[in-house]
Image (cartoon, rainbow, N blue to C red; front, side, top):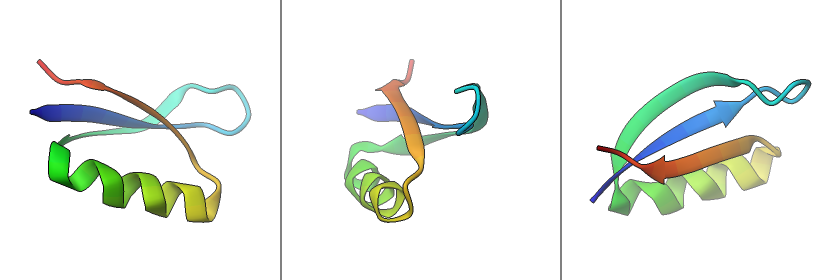
Length: 46
């Protein structure tokens, strides 16, 4: 399964970057974002 991960702007919450990754990569990206305080929006990719 693939997921779209969007990094969100800290000020207004708009998506500033988007990438599609496989399920195995989601955990790594979420851990990196948590360590740096980034906000993410994750949804299944079509």
